[in-house]
Amino acid sequence: MDIKDWQKQVDDWISQFEEGYWQPASMMLRLTEEVGELAREVNHRYGQKPKKPTEPEGDLALEMADILFIIISMANSLNIDLEDAFSRMMEKYRVRDSNRWTKKQDALSVERATDG
Image (cartoon, rainbow, N blue to C red; front, top):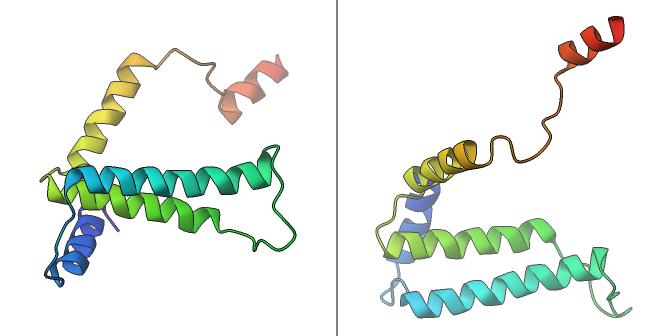
């Protein structure tokens, strides 16, 4: 599924309700809330704060998907094409950060280096 499909699916869902999209500030607050829920789950699993024995296990994937839903909703409400924005962002990283980190060698390069 393409990002455009995600945007349409979210728009179809929200468009069925009279209230429609929330105001951008409200969506930003909701995004912050959802990121906090993800942070809490990551902290419980990998950080220094263990869950209480009575707390159920959270779902990292679902928390991330909640964040995607809010981002897509916000983009839709502001008429932003996320597919285009994502492509432009990746190009920015390709140019700006292409030599920032150590690249992995492909299997053929490793084989050549060890054969000598």
